[in-house]
Amino acid sequence: MLIRSRAPLRIGLAGGGTDVSPYSDIHNGAILNATISMFAYAIIEPLDDDRIIFESLDRKERFESAMVDYLEPDGQLDLLKGVYNRITREFTQKPLSFKLSTYVDAPAGSGLGSSSTLVVAILGAFAEWLRLPLGEYDMAHLAYEIERIDLAMAGGKQDQYAATFGGFNFMEFFGEDKVIVNPLRVKKDYINELEYNLLLYYTSTSRISSRIIAVQSDNVIKKKEKSVEGMHRLKEQATMMKEAVLKGELDRIGDILNFGWQYKKDLAEGISNEQIDRIYEAALKAGASGGKISGAGGGGFMMFYCPNNSRFAVMDALSQFGGEFRNYQFTKKGLTSWTL
Image 1 (cartoon, rainbow, N blue to C red):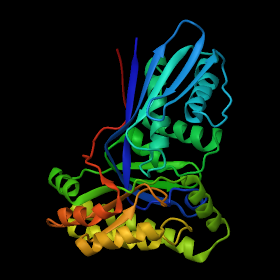
Image 2 (cartoon, helix red, strand yellow):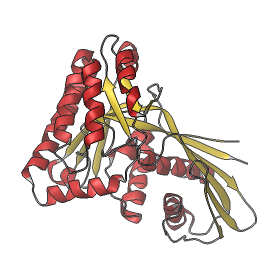
Image 3 (tube, rainbow, N blue to C red):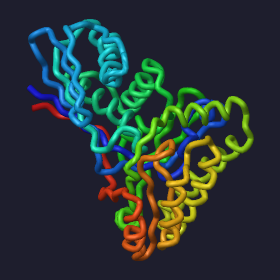
Image 4 (cartoon, rainbow, N blue to C red):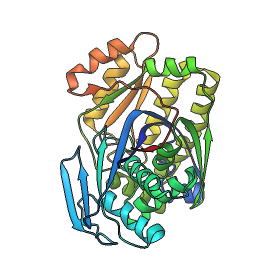
């Protein structure tokens, strides 16, 4: 028997950073994101030999243990261990014997929410195998707790909900623990135009997002005015983007992205750097009307809105920087699991 699951990665269109504690706890947050046709995969194969085997196929890592009910996180495949530990503690109350294999279509630290999406995919595989009674909000919240509380990994709340729900969503974050996901009914013609005009560019660099997020959170705690004001503006940006996408005012999107990018750089040191600035300016000069870094910043993926037929000129202009463009489509579905 094989149990498979997959969850989509996401691009954050607006509001990124306002889902991060303590800003979202104090001021509430808002984000607009959309899932794309790049995925995190999890495959469970039940065993009967009292072993636990983890394999990260994309990272070429392997872990093996005797069947126990708790695996100590030690820096090796900790996301997999964290999910397993919560499953045995909260649902089975006994150890399991199985092989878990994972794969992610984007590198770690690329800004598309790969770590959180992988946690959701693994949870989905366990839920399929063990028939766990988890709804969408339950699944996303549990994934958040595993990553942020159990494993103490810094980050926000949007990725787990995007991966679970799928599609275009306007998300609102209230206080420490309340999240509302508002699915958006975006017309297909608008989605087609967004796919054509919104280029996804991988800078061929990655970063440890937790470091940037830790600085961002510290700036809120210390009430650094420039950083907090930047988050306020990004929250406004999420509402602006929602209106533009729903109304089909697509010519505004580049300007809205650029508005957010200018304020996002105020959240914490390291979000941008000289190379990212050079790439951004080259894209604008070639015809892009706006763009942003994906995720916490510092590297990974960037996106650019290229109206009319400027996408080809932008692609040509960025060829000098050594990155690559990734084809994608927007997806409607979130977490999916099945059994063979």
